[in-house]
Length: 471
Image (tube, rainbow, N blue to C red; front, side, top):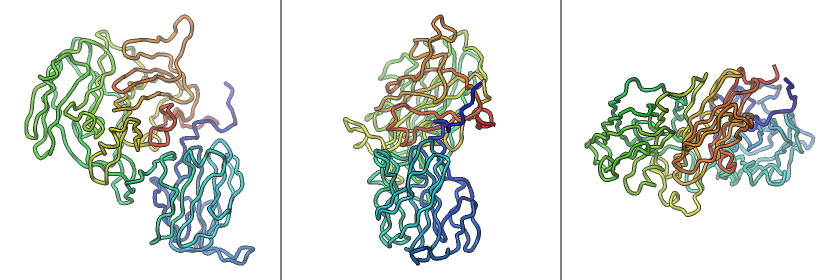
């Protein structure tokens, strides 16, 4: 098989700074990814030969306060906000891990010049007490999210890092909390079929604090303590009997609406107060990937605040065996203030602009924790767009879906015309099953091909083999 030596498009997802990367003397990364260095000890050598001790004077005679390591990838700078201890002159090294040329250009005109993919360059810049903004000067790149800021500790934050186009953007009205707990990764492995034909289940609705993106804690409403709620998997003909409980201590009434059921809205779907419970019984009459959610008014608020999940109903004869199965729910988050519920006013906008678009409830979690498969293995993903308001164009870069079952319409592997699928369009509350194989070792980004949302958290990775296509 031909193997390209050009950096693959999958590198648009490889944004993390390697542990031990050089950092400035006394400098801390405001939005450092897990494992990134925060401050190198004085007078010690950093990886790559950079030094974090005060460097000799440059040609202009100004002494360097320290060095800053900045990585570029094809969606932004990482990190996009840097805090240093003192004003002064810094040597900023740009390491371009992207596939196309970028630069780093500062508000005072200092620039690294254009840097090709897999190359690096260093520029010296004077950081004033008021801080300094930074962009990529390639036309359109700053608008797409490649911008940030250097801030001096104790000073005002330089504008430029709070955009919505780059990785993990910050809402204009909600600041990231550097002390927020790390997000908890949601296991994307699809569950096995529930055994038997009759299933007695319990589902407790909770109201609790969760980190939905690094630095952002919201008071979410859940089914079963997770966002999304637990995935349920049954077959056509099964009977499902769910005891729904609204936990004592909750503040809100909640309810449950299974799209996979056929029951009266004002019977099993009625709202229950904190401390109450009801039994919701239904029969799985139709196969598919279905949504369940809270329907208590306003339903938009309850869904936008985390109350949604997936039901997989297989045909009575089951599904063919594959090597790996995952379940992914796409949703939107409209940030409320730290520790509060999502912002209903934002969610109600006629032209919705979510702060984050999430896979399984946490922004970018599978970029940092790739889903692992064997090269050439058959992979099946159950995918649901929970909305509440925007469409999804589900796509796995570097693959072709050979099987798609969307809302009962099926594209079969091995069809007479060798037809395939590149993306699956899903309106809110629509689900699908997609299947594919990976052609070679490497990284395969999971995205919605509505690319304005990729930089807002709708980005993951599938790692085939060891993730390296060149070994």
